Length: 187
Image (cartoon, rainbow, N blue to C red; front, side, top):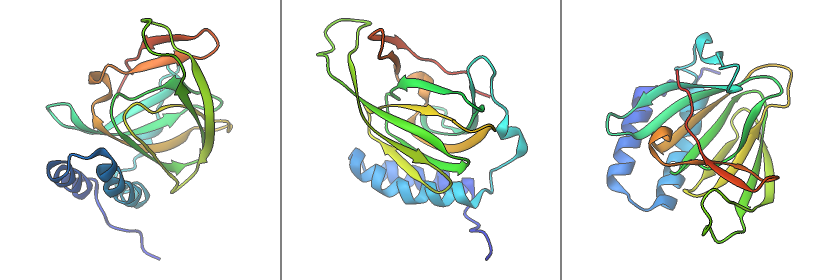
């Protein structure tokens, strides 16, 4: 069977159209979800360089598309073996599609009233292993962590409503009950 020829450029065009026509986040997520899966699985954008990951960070955020006004941010994230990302939010909606290898997503919810800066109480509410073709859609405010529990680098395709470093997003430490600003290194 021949691979779907849906290109990254076609996907970006569809994203721009959807977000210009619709403002309701649930509708955006429902429309973007199947298109993100189609784009991710077409692998027309996939190059060996996208498997590069920052050793210190534990993962690589490889930019595939970034709008000049910081909306619509599309990246390939490579996760080093046995590494991942602590619980975090995105400050925007997100759609993640597994491309190469399983990644465990753990979902959290805040239990505190958000009145104390730097403080956060989280409760684990679920998890899902995201493998090739699996999709995770996260509304603004959702908190999750990602773990690559394999012995090799994995890769996933991520679509965001805004550039991650321009949303005021946070990282959380459930054990110490802390919330800190989060900026990621991108390539």
